[in-house]
Each structure stands twice: as structure tokens, then as C-alpha cells.
Length: 160
Ligand code: MG
Image: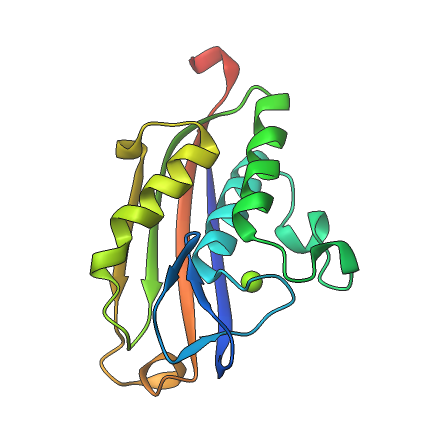
């Protein structure tokens, strides 16, 4: 077994869609970034790459590369899944938490979970997603941005 951790933050701004786990959540603000700024998918990718010993998303998909401007992070997650398959690493499970004061994300978690499971080629019960607030404290609490934490477990070939 190999464990990995991912953490990401993006700033909330007007005039951008709010994309989380590949789901566009209706909201007056969206996340700012070079890609679609899908903070959840970024944290999940970093957890998977971390578990695989493959660095981080900045190394694989540099934010100064025009190829990744506005790209769907779900597309990047598929590329991460391909890297794992090349190394015969199977996804044991992923657990992630989105930290956001608003909006209420619970209604969208099922769709996000489905998207991540499909990209990774695993059953949905291997993906667990949660959303929490920080009780009005800090940068997420005042709505300046959103954060996401993720952990992932990968299984090496001899375990399968
Ligand atoms: Mg990011």
C-alpha cells in the first residue's frame, strides 16, 4: 500500500464558474486559476501523485504552460489515472474534504463522486467526499477562497 496527501487552495472571484469535482455548481463566485481551478480535483490529483511517488500536479501540468489554460481538471485527472495504470498502481480509496463557507455543497457531492470514480475507473464506494465550513474563520470563512484536502491509498501490483 502507498498513501498520499493533497492540499490545494484557490481564490474566489466574480466572473468565473465554480467547478468542483467536475461539477459546475451554480454560485455568484468561481475559483480563479490557470485551469478551471477545480480545487477538489487538484487536491485529489496531488494525493494520487504523492502516493505514486510522482511529485505533484505543478510538475506534470505546469501553470505557465498555455496547453493547460482553462483546461478541465477532470481531463488532467484522467491523465493522472493513466500514469497510475502505467505503473500498475490501483486506487484503493480516496477521501477528500472541501472547505468552503458557501454555497451548500452537499447536493453536488454525489455528482462529484461519480465524476472522480469514472475518471479513475473505480467503483464509487472507493471515493468519499465531504464538505465543511470553517465556521466563518480564516480565508475560507470570509469567502476569500476555498480549500480542499485529500488522501489516497494506492495498491502496488503484488497486493492485487
Ligand atoms: Mg490548484
